Structures are given as C-alpha cells and as structure tokens.
Length: 326
Ligand code: PEP
Ligand code: MG
Image (tube, rainbow, N blue to C red; front, side, top):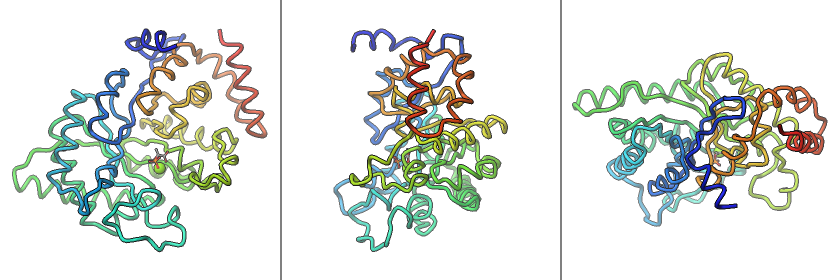
C-alpha cells in the first residue's frame, strides 16, 4: 500500500544480508528532480536531454538555454551524481525542426550518437553547455546508441577540444567530468570489454537492447507479445555485461524500464546488478524488493536462471525464489 511505501522512503536500500544498492531516477525535464528527491533517489541516473529539443518551438534550444537546464538539475541534486545523456533523437523521437526522415528503418538509421556525429555543431553546442554546467554539481555524461568504439574516441576528441576552448575563455568546468556509454545495442553488449576500456562507466538501456536482440520494434503493437525481457538471451547478455564491468572495476548501472519493474528486481540482483535507475514513481516499489532480498539465495539461483530454456522457465524460477524468500 502507499502507506507502507512511504514508510520505507527514508530506509537505505540495503539487502537482508547487508549489501547496499544504489537507486537513481530517470528524468525528462529539469522539474522532475523534485519527484526524484521526494522518492529518495541517490541521484539522477538518466536525464533524457533530448526532451529539451522536443518542445513546441521551431528552433533548437540555445547553448545558454541548455546550460541553464543542466545547471538547474545539477544544483537541485545538491552534489549527488547527475548523469545527463547526450541527445538521443532520430529514432522514435523526432523534433519539429528536424526534416521529415525518409530513413527506410529509423531504428537502424541515424540515431543517438550517430546523429550527433553527423551533426557535429549540434553535438558540440550541447557538450559546451554540459561542460559549463559541470561547474555547478556532479554532472556525468552518457552517450546513447554506441555501436563502434570509435564513437567513444570521437566523443572524447570533441570534449577535449571544447575543454581547451573553455580554458582559453576562462570559463569554469569540471575537468574530471566522467564519460559513460549506454549499452543498448547487442554488438556493444557482446564487445563491452573494449567499450569499458574507453569509458568511465556504462549504463544498460534494456528498452533498446531487448528491441535489437529480439528483433521486435518496441513501438509495434502487432509484435509486442514477443517483446519479453525474460527471454534467456537478454539475461545472458545482461550477465555478460555486468560481469565484465565488475571484472574491469568499472561501474555498471541499468536505466531501461527493466530496472524499474519490481517483478524483475530479484532477477537483476541475481545477475549482479547493484545500480538501478528508473522513473521516480517506481523507486519505492523496487526498494521494497531490495529490502526483502537475500543475495546469498540469489547467487544460488543464478546458474538455474541462466540455463533456463525459455522465458516461462525463467518466470517459474523467479516465482519459486519469491515464494522461498527468507
Ligand atoms: C533504453 O533504451 O533502455 C533507454 C533507457 O533509452 P530510451 O528508452 O530513451 O531509448
Ligand atoms: Mg535507448
């Protein structure tokens, strides 16, 4: 009930056997930080910055307008981490000022970091606004739709050039600003070790990772029955990504809808996930699952979960774990 959820609002998200989990909020506009804080988020795990570009006006937000928005979020979170994703447009989100796309398959086309690499002026203006705002809080950058490691190298090159510009102009920024990448394309999940060498952290975008792994358009109702986060291939990819990040000592979080589904919290904990980012409204429901979880039990269940033959088998195992919860 709501009452019980409010009671756990101030509890730290610690499992029964004493492991602390980090819970972050997904936000779309600067004002959403209020709800994130009200639900006890440890920071912002995903600020979908493209929403600044989806407003009704016909033109782009200027560097100053972007700077004000990023600064507002950084200040509202009082030094807690704020992960801002660079523009992720071109696929399902098309702004007014962008010409009608004639891409044969937008989900496989010029989207996310690919669009930013093609429209460098758009990208560099955003990076400049982000760097300026980094003087006002703990901002980290997150690049969407990574497929080739070279996209990280190019992003770093842009970042260094803009840092040099700002230094020349005497404008403050966080020189140690971290650069993270979204793992949401199966190729990036499989080759995650190469990405981790170039990045400070990663965040798993399960909405797209499931879409591309299962070849199911996430917005097509006629195939939505096939969009199943419990497909064993998804669990196997997630496990590989999380284990590789742990082995390389780099933080890994998840910001897709899976992270905010309380029915899946135990599965994700079993797969080794320790950082979750979700819509603020989901935070307390997921925290309640974490407070009830026993990692020793979940570790014991992992090999069975990974060996499951299909989604129904995974579901049955999860039901068993929940019933057997200590
Ligand atoms: C994702 O793909 O899981 C994700 C978090 O990004 P978006 O839903 O904005 O594509
Ligand atoms: Mg995505």
